[in-house]
Image (cartoon, rainbow, N blue to C red):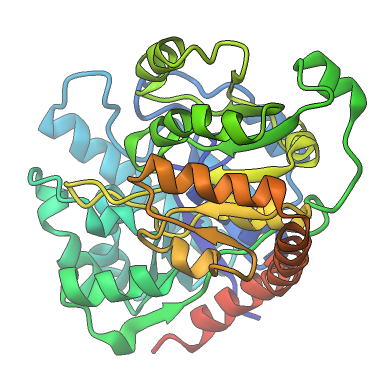
Amino acid sequence: MTRVLLISSTFPPVTGGSAVVYDNICRAAQPQVVGLAPSCDYQTGLPIEGVEAHDRSAPYVIHRLPLLRPAEGGKSHALADLRLMLRVLKTALGIARREGIRTICLGDLVYGGWLVFPLRYLFGYKVLIYVHGEEVTTRDGGGLFDAWRARFLAHAHAVIAVSSFTRDALMRLMNLDPAKIVLIPNGVDLARFQLRPRNPALAARLGVAGRRVILSVGRLVPRKGADRLIAAMPAILNAVPDAHLLIAGQGMLRTTLDALVREKNLLDRVTFLGEVTDEDLVDLYELADVFALPNREMPDGDTEGFGLVFLEANACGKPVLSGRAGGVVDAVTDGVNGLAVDGNDSEAIAAGLTRLLQDDRLYARLAQGGLETARRGDWKNRAAEFLKACDQAP
């Protein structure tokens, strides 16, 4: 039986797409996959709230170190960084030896990819690297680890890509041998995300009872397109006067988006929810009529590697609207489980959402297509593909 140690700085209760991926692989493949993650936030160095509660309830084994990479909140010192790296390596080796693990998967390319060298060449482990997209498409242009990304990938036994876009980027930007790449699209937890009736109490609490709800979930960063979505709302309201936009997530654009809502006189039609719990997220999908995240590629190459939220919304019976950038084209097929538009074009976003909210036949067809798309992406299937990739990597 193949056993795998999965190492990543992004693991629940930290939020984000990669954290969801690693959590679900560990859940669906337990007890074969064991996790190693930090207990502190690498951005601040402070303890992550809810770590102990998460680890107690998790059905898989997860080990913790305070940090797996230097914290961004403090000054970097070469000696301190080296000590941290040695501690991570020593801990990973100890876990692998105690639990009889011979395969290790690295979930952080830029800051964790260095582990491929000692793990493979000094200690003889099979090493895979999991790649989502932005870590190879974003051109940061600085730092030793950033410059070494292609070397890390070249020395891995295999590299997992979450979309055809990510696979192509690995070959085009990192010159990676295509024979090393295993395509495993992201999945969805069908036990959690299901078609259920709307919760009237939640609708009343959020002030959207009797309204057509557009939901967007994601970090408030430029590539997610929340600014273009807000800019589209006046045109949507002209056609669908009872529409209301709910935005879940936090990020660097929050202040800018607040100002845009005021500028467009949308204070009573756009609600920011901030970070939401896993339980609230399911309720929000149930509450929504449609899901929208009009993603786009940024000038520095930052873009979506896949877009888990689209599958989650589909699994709850909601048609989706996406951009056409990055790996989202693997998650959303225009006219099948949603509509794909130019994420830079607020008029196209408004037209697409208006169609979804007004055309009942289109809505029903895309909702059904979404359910079928989500069922094919069950995490149980994806976890089996992951274990197969680990087992068959040369």
